[in-house]
Structure formats: structure tokens, C-alpha cells
Length: 108
Image 1 (cartoon, one colour):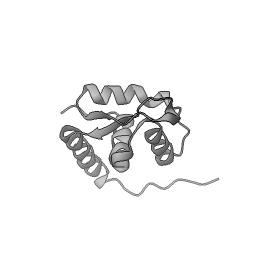
Image 2: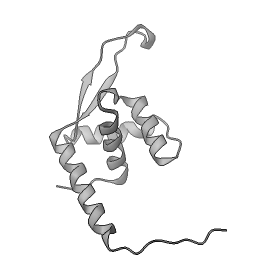
Image 3: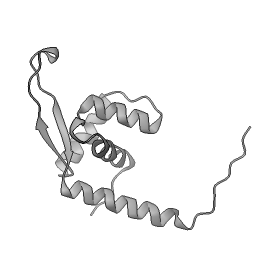
Image 4: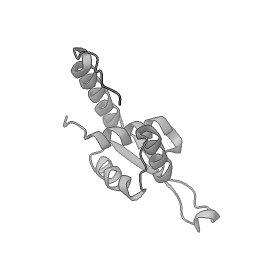
């Protein structure tokens, strides 16, 4: 299995955390919360599309709503392949960090 990029990992984790509430804006907000950075919604749609093409995510459509002008939300869900990809990256991160001495930084 090919390794995930860092943004792919973060987005998959956001989708997993959000479960049935994982749609574009909620994913963007979760990524921003997790990273402490401001994310524009458009910045996550490229990786979401790529993850969908790789079959790590599947999509479902919600019901059209008046507040969205009759449009429906696209919800994202991890596939079994997506879960395995996250398990793989977690194992790799655990191995790679296991023998690293504590990182200490000088503070100004």
C-alpha cells in the first residue's frame, strides 16, 4: 500500500473523527482545529477527491435542504481500505518515533 501524504492522513483522521457528520465544511473545520491553522475550504477538496479516487473514501449524498438552495451535502466515509491506510500510518509513526530521544527546544 502506498504511503499517505500528511494532508491525506489528517483529512482521513478528520473524516473518521466526524463519522456521519463528515462533509466539506465540517472536515475543513476539523482540520483547522487539529492543525491550529486556518484552512480555506477549497484546500481540502483536492485531497478529498484524490482519496476518493484511491478508494480510501466513499461518498453519500444528503437530502436537499432549503438553506442550501435545494442542494444536498456530500458526506465522506472511510472505506475498509481507508481504515487500513490509517492503521498502516499509525504503525509507521509509532515505529519511527519509538527510539527518538525527547526533543527539547530552547525557548526565547
